[in-house]
Image (cartoon, rainbow, N blue to C red; front, side):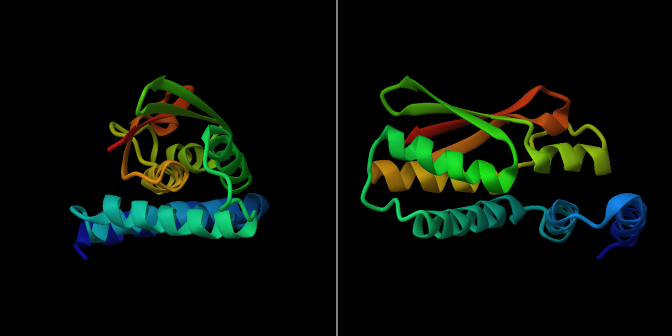
Length: 167
């Protein structure tokens, strides 16, 4: 790891210590730190790695809520509603075309915490959630899907906007 990356991680550690003093080290802080560390260690591949982790998390959610028998838009909304529990945000799903969906995430704890620790970002940061949504679309519609976060709370926006396309 380069010297500047070590410096950044020391800064993060110091920032987390401040948060710890102010009310306890939160799991979201740790997740944000892991995400940021991956971006430093694997700048060319971390986005896809986090999307895969998101898809694996989705499998756990499907198993936990036993929703494997349902395969329609209500299932997609149900799965994403259960995800709300883990991301502590409000999710809205919109169909905008035959194979195209817009998913809005309001008050997402991950992008809010990312912004708190690292300031406003130029690009969206929630690749984990992209993976969850991509996996949900693939599960519900039994087709490959591609999801991209278009707008992010960490960029100073009101909500995160994900665009999902069935292939």
